Length: 376
Ligand SMILES: Nc1ncnc2c1ncn2[C@@H]1O[C@H](COP(=O)(O)OP(=O)(O)O)[C@@H](O)[C@H]1O
Ligand SMILES: [Mg+2]
Image 1 (cartoon, helix red, strand yellow):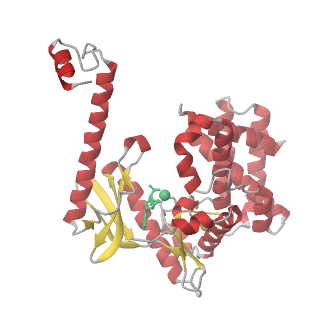
Image 2 (image 1 turned 120 degrees about the horizontal axis):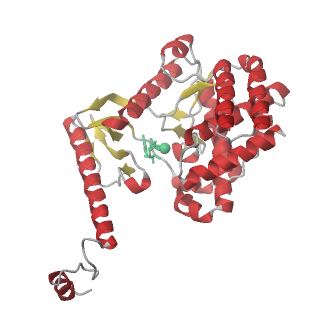
Image 3 (image 1 turned 90 degrees about the horizontal axis):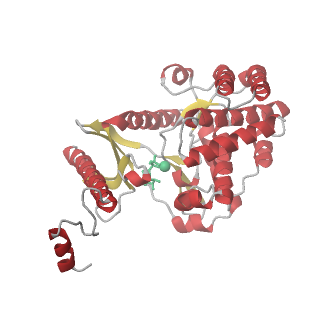
């Protein structure tokens, strides 16, 4: 539309789309978008204000990794910068997300301390925090060392190599000692035999009451969780990253041609058994690959992310091979693995059972079918 046409429309009391501006949906949409983008700018401004107040500077040549983009469900401002002469990445969130940042800060420190007790250093690098977490009235933030990734190296990896890298990360995290003190005082969630068994039984009852599982299936499930408790008691507690996919793993070529691996995004750290990290990966992959196959419209907007995570159909995880590798073929360990995997699915179903989000609904139904098959 030409400017003079637009002016003429406005003067006649119509909006630029030729509608009554009070009822025009296009106008409302524009206003909504403007509202969102000014809100976003305001939050980014507050985050930058906080960084400035602690003497941090932002590297303006690098695009922010996240910047409170509502459409992408971004709850943080994540940007490269400098603090006390060091290259860092700042992660800043509103006060409502402060707990998540404080947890992440605590978790990085726990892993740093756990590494200091090792005789031989790990064969991966785990991101460390720089300085202390910081906050003002509106925002909370932390800084981590800036790590380099090599996208071209990642692009060369075969599916098997991606699975191996994930395995290397999980194995290394499990080499870290979980001391009695960490178990007692760290504040991390501890999924021990008792918790998995009683949560599993409880989730099965709730989901039965809500009509999600029929009583026959619910009974079987409850029995599985009751009877597994003794076996699970033999498992050592280990650290679980909870999100050990390709997007949280950085790669670099080392000096002698080897691949150096770094792990970041330590927010979801927990203590559980050594099947839990693999269970999460397998469950996420099976869901996202199901989505890719059966719901292309839902998959399309997240395709890029899923590929970066190495959880798309180009990376076919073979459950049996992974169970064999992790358990060495031991029957009772394999059973513990499968129950942990069901437990992880149940926690996802519980968290999303009232959600009307289409992705969540697809996941919930898929997991129900998988659990059913597993118990047949
Ligand atoms: N220390 C770091 N060094 C380099 N890049 C980082 C660092 N921390 C975060 N990033 C970049 O920001 C992205 C999001 O950070 P992440 O900690 O994974 O947050 P989220 O919980 O939002 O996934 C990462 O995938 C990575 O690209
Ligand atoms: Mg991440």
